[in-house]
Length: 350
Image (cartoon, rainbow, N blue to C red; front, side, top):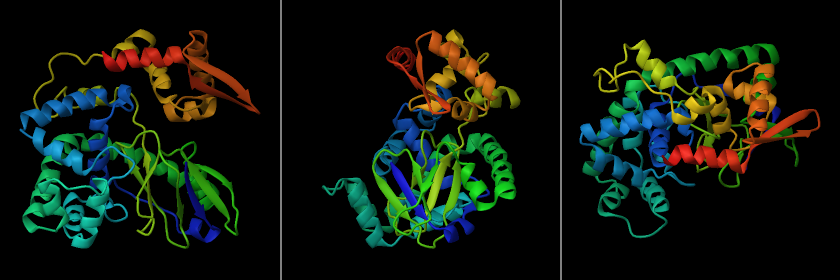
């Protein structure tokens, strides 16, 4: 669980990044290539990008980036500088200007304090050639894994921003904060603080704003829960999922005349994932995101459905034994069953 402690003054300086951050998209997309999260949404992207990486001769380069930026509880903060960097080159300049002492500390933490591989050791020492190589690796990876999907990433951020703006206009800072549910849940404060924000997180962690502005950064490749910097002394940012809908890549290909990531024509019509062909895109997406309990309202919000439509899909999944539902106060909470897990796993492993 992540807990962010704030005061009313902290809320008044809450800000939302207006553009996608290319460094965060690089880091989070690297993580998606190392895991199978949100498979229904991102497996088509994974297949396309892995093929593009192989064609570009970047397999060993991406493997080295994965070692430097592992999908783990800790990865180095210096790879995601600033409070919402707009341009790749601006962000890379900040990355490559990281002081050697910080490089050494964060890279050592990444490798568990043990002996560093030669390449990582040179980077940790601030070797100019190693830093130049890192910059080149990040540029080349970005060119095949992030940049080809820039239109979709920018469109998702553009669609998210009016939602935040309307919430702020209607309800002020409190309304803006409420618009981030269900990822962020507000609780009453303790110990003289006005409140605490809670979010699902892989480890117990906390962030005390203490008068510092919190920057919310929307991220296309962020899934399941928000992400913060490991060092709470750095300017606070919270990266939150944009949750693109399943089939986004197929729709993007259609809009581009069915071109692939490398600009060549895609071979034949895009096929829906097997689970989606079996139970439908929306129900497959619902099953995919119920890796943690959600209310009917939260399910509808995540899938961009009306409450009645979300309830109807949940009923079908429950009657099939794929989810379980229980009433908690005025809400009905849904969670994936063992049968639903097995069906989803069967799709993931095929």
